[in-house]
Image 1 (cartoon, rainbow, N blue to C red):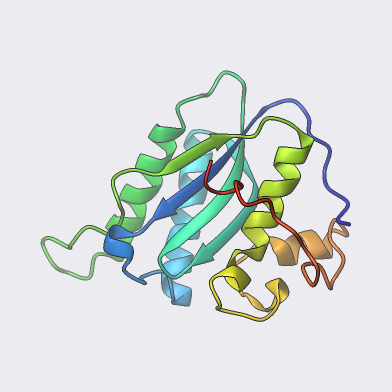
Image 2 (cartoon, one colour):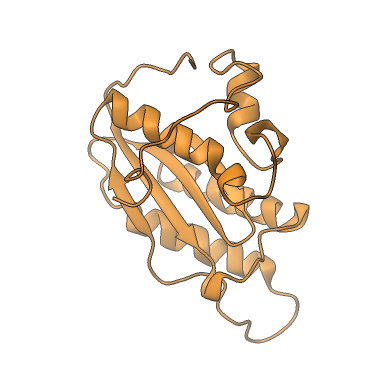
Length: 168
């Protein structure tokens, strides 16, 4: 059982953000780097912490902790998507859309909900058949959480995630 951080003050949100027409554009170190830069620039302007994150070729899942006074996460996602797109431009005047215009948001209600969504995020690469074990996926916060001692190195070998999680 992972040693989860305690559910504490601040507003926790689970997000799913999908690429336009599910194009697999999030597959290179460069695109991951652009996404990381876009997120950091947004965090500098509108602070939030990333509790968990997984980036797959055509979508990402994450949990953010926002300040109680900041509930405009749509603004943050708009900035991230825009900055990613600006960084991705390759000299063309107009690129095709990179992101679906909408995203999924779910407020985390309690410790069990937090644990379920942390599990969902970190197990997602296995669910989609990209890897055999969660730790084999490169673009996940699971590696950081293992280093911090919050997850055991073999996490995910026997895990159950309720069917409703990620589809609320």
